[in-house]
Amino acid sequence: MTKETILILGEENSWRNHLVYSLSKFNFDIMESVSYSEAHRYLLSSYNIPVVVVSLNPFEESHIKNLKSLKESEPQPSLLLVSEIPNQELALRLLEKEVVDQIIPQDHLPGLFAAIKNELSKRDLIQKNEFYRQNLDKLKSLQKRNHKRAEDLEEIYESTLENLMTALDLRDVETFGHSRTVAKYSLVLAKILGIKDKTGLNNIKKGALLHDVGKIAIPDSILKKPSPLSPEEWEKIKLHPSLGYGLIKEIKSMKEIGNIILYHHERYDGQGYPTGLKGQDIPIEARIFALSDALDAITSHRPYSEEREFGEAKQEIDNNSGTQFDPTVVDAFNSLSIDKWKKIRFQTTKILPSAEYMRNISKI
Image 1 (cartoon, rainbow, N blue to C red):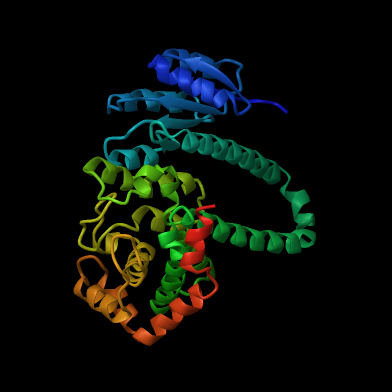
Image 2: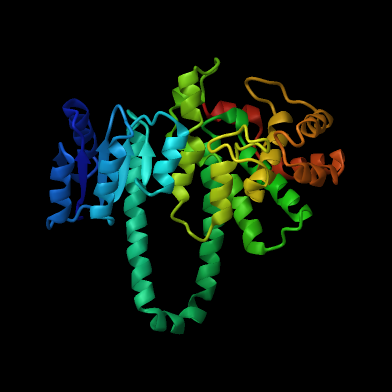
């Protein structure tokens, strides 16, 4: 099996050596560079380098010019930045402007390994897509034969997506089933608000299931911390929408998914994060999800709060109409009775294992 070549760029010897040693164990050929000029030479040479890992700590905005130059000189390799970004606005800017492809926190080797594998898989998919494009006429003749196979693959994809989010939920048994529940709430609200397009509704469901996928890159020591988070830890938690968006931003046809992942912590009054969008500037699917997320959080047990009745949830949502929530979405929520929302929750969660069972298997 041919080894993939990874270029590691970093001026700090000990950390660069640590990366080289760690990644070498995963069947990669590792090249090292201590400067941007040397990295440029490697990329312009005959080496086939699909992934470049740049380690910058501390990160300063002066690094952006060099990163842009590196990306522009050879746009084909994926550029992964390993660094502690000072704030989520800067991290989002780096991703949106495509200065880097992914951002991984310092000292998070599992996240880095997952990012490398993801970029290699993405490259393989792009190459396959190009092959299919060049052979479109031939593929058209096979379209009818492959129709059933495509349907089967779509079912597998849907099942895989839900299983992925179930696995992510297992990182915190207290929120097990949360993604499935808020996905159902979001679909109900979207339909009440007149969204009828099947593809759009399906993408809202997927975005709701994937809304917290960026927490993959957040260490358990922060994510599962039983005591209050420090300001520094809270800033890392607030990076998860941008990190999650970085994972799916190449999926061009799934706008609603990206909008939910990136903007699900925005507030209608502009006091949310990561961008501080306000009012109608927040995509409708993210405004829908924000209410769905709050409804499930209020009516579910959490380590920091006991579950409350749906009547209390309704009162809190009404009280925050126009501040946290879009008043139009609040009106859509209020168009259904409390009993109907309870029924929706019951129908969604009745197939899930009990919380006690999940706590027990998480100890195995």
